[in-house]
Length: 350
Length: 199
Image 1 (cartoon, rainbow over the protein chains, first blue to last red):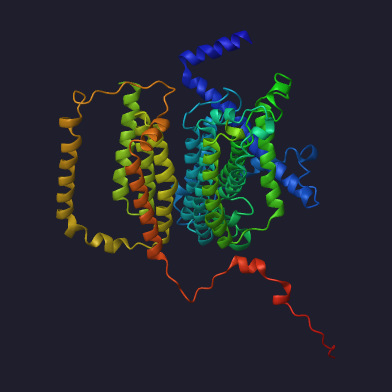
Image 2 (image 1 turned 45 degrees about the horizontal axis):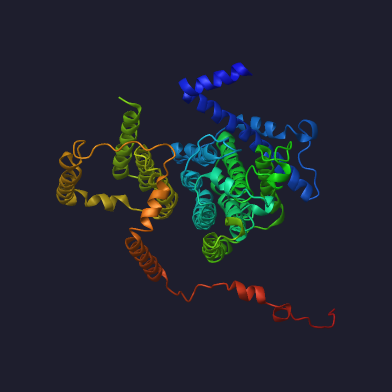
């Protein structure tokens, strides 16, 4: 153990690139595993919600199902449609997955446990989630298919609309925390009130709007008009098969986990314990720690699956109405309210 | 060559390549995508100049929003390139002259006469804890408050003008009024009548 720590410090001084690469692997490899088992959790949970059992054939209780799916997709043929734009067709899935992974660079898992402690971390996250839409648009256009193109158009309009509400919700968070640094935002939520000191309470409307916009940004049900299998088959990825399809799939689930984790960080206190610090300081598992981030992320992620099992798909004009005429005005009003609360030092901001 | 120089020349080369591709590609969608690449490269150069706020906002605003709408429009339009190219030779001399004038102007303003290292020494690197978002905000909302407000009003006028130009009532389109839909009662729509069974 001692020698490992010495080796790690030596790496930090001499081969910092290698050290950073190791850190990236330590973040991305478990993330990919989480994505695989998130798909399994989705199928199981929705199965139980619909009084079915879900996958239970591969391995004990179906635990190996995601592995089997991955192997199947790897060995499938990659079909490229006639007259499709080959380069763009193959780049598109990567453009969906790339930003979803890159955003984790600034994510603080615990006090000081972060790959890059950026001052402008929140802006960086917002910028990266906003370029995720390119994967969908390029896929729809490069496929040379009407269904795919319609899906891409719907998705582009929807993501641009909800990005504004999402951005305004984040403006509320940064006004409340007084910082763009994600670690600082979590530290600003620390108080003697425990769970009631977190930002979900003073920023409640922004919390709801951020999460719902996150569901819309990731094109998940009930906002999944980009796929809309009853109208446009599978939307933007109708022409994809094999590995490129799998990469789209990974990107979608990685984005869901990212939105859940960000909700946990910005509104649910990140690594902070829900109990007041003076009660549980240093107590095993009850004190602050990385496990709280995972628990809160899983809690938020569960809602994505619950929504999908519960709500019917929104009609396109209803989506636009909700985004532009309901969410954006509410967020603007609440930014004003937060500003007043901060200036006059209400309970959370004293 | 230091690492910073290498990164600068790398991003500069990508930027020039992408910008050239924007105006030479035949397919407008490819042009738009190369413009996105150009934005990325210039954001990289800005990051190198320690302007991280501007760099990230460039990505956020131009790549994340403006270019998405651009692509949206370009993909929908069926642009006839033959007619666009037809006038190329006719306009060539005027265009070349304009380009020359612009190049000379740019050279006079940012050329070695005004911007050499002797005229403007390289600023000292800031410490890692330096936060230029905060600095920018505090200057923008205090010293340059009026200019900032004027810019905001101009943008507002732009928004209203754009909406005013595109908003037209089309009598043949049918709109739904969600509040009426929600308020509707069973008695408004449904009538139960008694009738004898027919044989």
